[in-house]
Image (cartoon, one colour):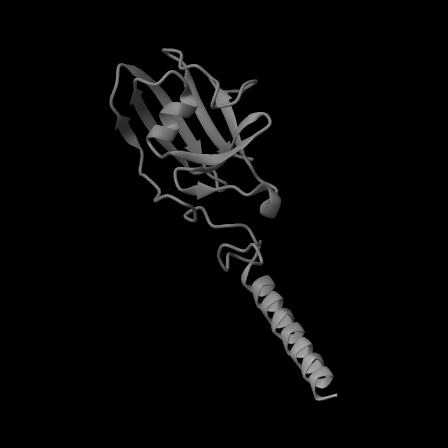
Length: 154
């Protein structure tokens, strides 16, 4: 009888500990990266990397212009120098972009330290070539001399 009672108490305590752990985990992992502003969107300075001011970056024989436009419309201009073949490779080498590999290639989530989270805020990084919405991803777009590239939060 004492053994049966002891097992019930142990099971009850274990269940309570698990419930408390799950509750704390849920509260601690609510997906919010900052307290944010009233709109619930992430501020432009939040992200994995430190935001850069712009200017010349990298070294190499290939060169292209990159414009980064944040959610508030602020633009940062870069002149990228690289020996890489694609825009994505060059920007990843300089830690200007970060993202996740998906079925269509690299899904860019962070640019110049600014994170756009579609799941949380409904915004994403759009890729443009010479002012036109790109039909290819940043990771497969070959660098073409004279072309300008842009990443904008939309």
